Image (cartoon, rainbow, N blue to C red):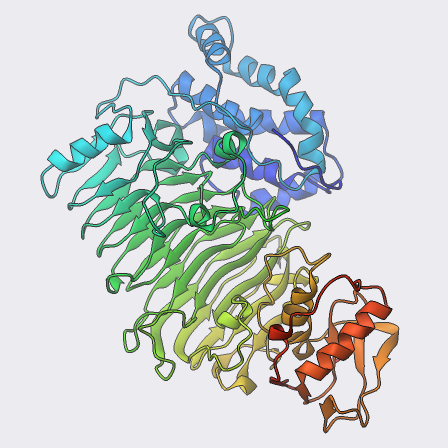
Length: 634
């Protein structure tokens, strides 16, 4: 396995998160995160890491789980050695425990002091994310009741023969290898015997994606589980996409169809997905509920633990896509609550617009989102994009009743979230530069009482570009306390609250202070912006970046626009910013972009920002007139 080494970090946030998710089966609490950061700040070494391992794995919380010795050893391997157990090591520890030759404290010390773990210390201490190691999956011994099925085909036969309303109980610790999508085509529940929750995930039945998984034909995403029957449910199951090992065996992919694969696809109403563990998702989303065959209603998604340690936040050169979402929901009257998301790299929760006239009343509440080692593009949002043929541009989306409330969002100080919470604006995400396309109006959403975690008389700091982005009518945004330290991680505004009132797409009762400004298209950019091609300059950095504030150079490099044909009704200079990627203008202007861009292109060449071997695509610089909203300048 090739590790991507990064610069040193002040504390190993992903190590903390991984020990909590793999030992305790939960996200770190706000107080856990606070104390860990303080204890480990500039103090990451083998001794401090081993001490924390002992603290977690001998704590009362861990010892009171009623785990068997086998289950304890399993979680220890995953949390400390970053993999499933190998058979010889596992049974050596198990036999010594069973025979009384070692205590549990001895086992913990042995693993923490092992050469294998000591060799991991540099990557833990120096890299924001150390992902997972490639491993062979391990099946735990268990004597519980329930079906002990070896593979998805066997489970499919049980489902096909079940009666409507049955619960299919799977044996605790069972390892079910999935080689094709599991189709739930009748109202049944799939559950682990005894219904262990995520804090006892080692007891769960585990559905694991095989490297040679047979995908659906055509463009349809291929999930591990496809729920087609109203009233069906997945309870207390571990769904493992096995991504790191698949990438290790197969290589990363540029095939967007494979990227679109899922853990669970929901095409039904009244579906329950509760108390499940999701890990190593191979694809772009863990749960996707699209409206392909009509609007879905009344989903209940609660108490799940979602980890994405495997994934990356940006494209891996040359063009490998590995970012992943948590839940993507196009369903009405849905409740998403009490879930935990660790290191999702795209967005943790996104709800989408429905058919015109159908209220989007989904409630997102009491979830924990932590980016401990990976960065993300968003935490939570409502996306109003009009990319479906059945949504005419002149219709509104109604969200009255939809709420984003009481969620906690945390990051390490070396990670970031581009836009923490957003409501409405697809132009921040979708890289379309046809200025005749409208985003569509949306009405009525509440964003209330979300925070970055309160402890020790203050809200914990996180890092982001934009804290809350509102581009929706009749919005109610109050009581949010997200302590964001603003840095330029993408091209999105460095603001607490952006309220796009002047765009005509936003109104309502929004807490202040806010900035009324236009967010330019595709400001959330998946590409590495350190060396973009010409198209990236024109499309993402120039067309829309004039609508946003950046620090100018000192003294500024100016383009005198007085009297020139490429700018009308404007007498102030335009500033080339310090990173030479974007331009800044201090007032309301109209720009004829084709001549203007040619001028900018010449300046880029003269400043050696780009070279003359890159060609200009004339189709990308049509004679659009770009309307820029007046904004605050430094």
